[in-house]
Image (cartoon, rainbow, N blue to C red; front, top):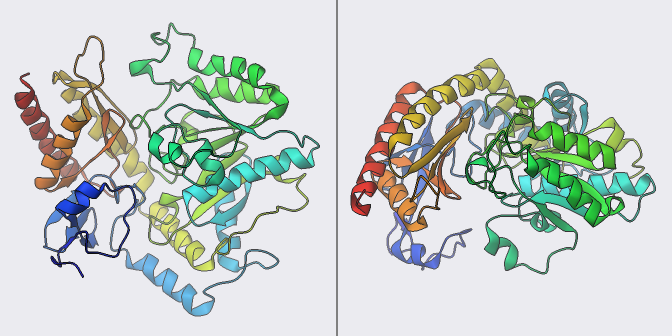
Length: 444
């Protein structure tokens, strides 16, 4: 039993994910309640949540009784049915709705329990498609350095960041191929956009030729990458990637687990780039985190050759999760939250841009309500910023009642889509204070 009922310590039987023992020894905050854009801990302290549940799923905010009621009603009617050999109405209704709101020709769907499972299932679908078309040899998947696509079997081999999560589990399934990311602020090729001719995209073709196109099943990528902190590529990037995939018969998996359902100011982030995915992975915002749910969408062309999708998760196509998702998406549409994400994102980014005058801030960037400040210890060389200093700023903000997080060398912002200008102004004021105090300590 915990000695301190308001903090988790080493006496607790609960295993936390990605939490160092040192932090547990100091004591872990126990969150007790959520209201709108705020979290409240066991001691009654309120936090402005600028990370939508830290892992970013809480799009419609906390305390939505409508979603709880939808889940409750479905629990009472039919709480479970197998995903193979039988169907259920909420899953069918959700598939029909997604066919209307997903990009272009995406029109077939299966439902899982998480984003990691969705990525895994998308890769399996891609493999099935090639197999039934007669290409039984293909097994490789191209990912990008700095990418994150979950931690399940197939997905972890495409993990290009948070390296201990991958390295501890090695050897992973063979077939991972990595290419460079479109990280213009710190270009891996040392080039400057737009004079680079998008080498990060065009160089993918050279990698495909080297790896043998017949052995490559898919290219997977987030439209906006999380690994470096809300990193959107140049406008032409995805068009080039799509053209390369088409030339070599490689399926394109667009990972919208974070970006989807309004996060970037459009229903799906790939809409900013105007290209057609072959497969689409979703999770997080699909239920706003109220019930675990992931999803995979694909085109008719992907599904048509597959005679039997040899795959099974016990909780696939779960009726309760699908009922919650239907109500969640209805709330987003009825309350105009995608438009709010666009408008509040512009307001937020304008505020963050003013921070570029700070000597340790390198770049402010963002798409909708997914934004980041990239830090540097030298603006001219764009040298990486010390991680411990970023942690200092996060800790300061938390003491002041605002929750931010670190991604790469950046501080990231992904608040609930219901956020207001007043909330953003509060977050900006706290952030400015934390940066200024850190600069003073560093002697800037």
